[in-house]
Image (cartoon, rainbow, N blue to C red; front, side, top):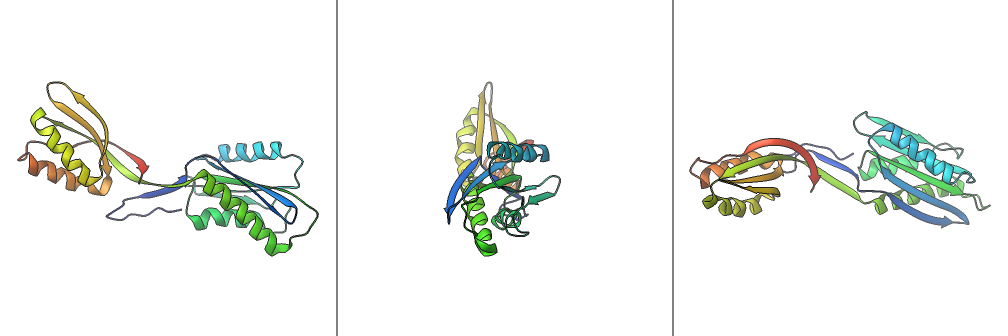
Length: 215
């Protein structure tokens, strides 16, 4: 799980962008990898059961999942030799650095024994392929805020926004202009200082919320 605090990036949160699928055949054994973003254990278990039902005729449905908020980690070899299936799938999640995700790898045995090393490589490849297909995305924490200003100042403020990588969520026009914006949290105070500089202290930012957004 990639999560840290830095002056430049703030808190980082890495997870899957959506659902992923990957298929690989090794020595006649077919491996289907499925990946999904989940935030609750119930959703992870439901997804595992869904894949097991879909591939009820398969010999093995191996899985692993990691959940951030509850610090939960689970995995299963589902009948494969200990350490050759569930743990390699879990290692893909851990080593790649994402969280709030479940991966299931289904194996249809092709009649040729792969050995422990072969199984580890196969389950790793299927899990990694599914995760990459789902897209691994890193988010950082943003502070949402509003800036209310006279019409004469709003273009000047919007010009400064580009130097702070600010996201513009909306603009309301009435007697004044109200800009609804979001900025990487560590940069909020610096932008507020810039607002004061360009407006001779007349304009400041008002915090309205927090969120994670893509870097």
